[in-house]
Amino acid sequence: MTDPLAAEARRQRVEGQLSVREIQARLGIGRDRVYALLRGVPPPEWTRRPRAKDELRAEALRLRGEGRSVDHIARQVGVAKSTAYQWVKQLPLDPDDEAAASRRARSRLMTDALRWWAARLGLPVDRFGRTTVKRHNPATVRRNTGADYRGCLVINVPRSREPYWRIEGMIAELFRIAGDVDPESMGR
Image (cartoon, rainbow, N blue to C red; front, side, top):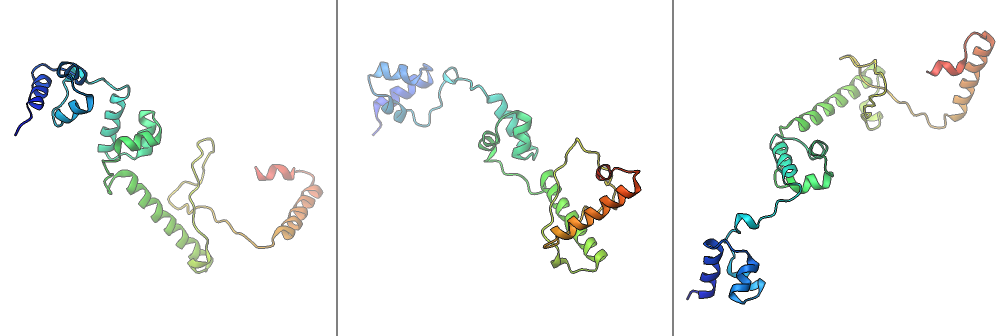
C-alpha cells in the first residue's frame, strides 16, 4: 500500500522543483516527515548552495588522483593538512606513487651508506646507531652532494667531556703560540 502523501511530496519535489520547506508548508507536515518521504529523491539544483571551498576540494581530489600526498595537497591548495585529509581520505594513494618511491629510494641510500661506513671502519653493522636523514636547509651551501657522498658519521664517546676539553685546550694553546690564526675562526 502506497502512502498518497509520499507520492504527492515526491511529485512536488520532482515536477514543482520545491524545497523541503515549501513542501512542508503545502502539505502541513513536519520537516523530518518530509525528509523521510523524499528519501532517495535528489534536491532541485537551485536549492544547492555553493560551498566556499568547492573549487579547492575539487582541486584536492584531482591532485590525489595524480598520486600526490596529503602534505603536498595541503600546501598546493592552501588548506590545513587535516582538511586536505578529510577531502581525500576515500582515495588511497597508489603504492607506486612518486612519494612512496622517494621514501624507498631514501631508505636504500641510508642502508647503503650504513654498509659503506661499516666496511670502511671494519665494524659490524649492529655497532651503529639508528640512521637519520638531515632536513634540507636551503640557506646552507652543500658541497658534499656527489654520488660518492655517504653522509656524515657521528661518533658518540661515553664520558668524553674531559678528554674533549683537554684536546680543545691543547689546540687553542698551539694556535696561541703560532699567533697567526684565531682558533675561533677555524670552525667556520
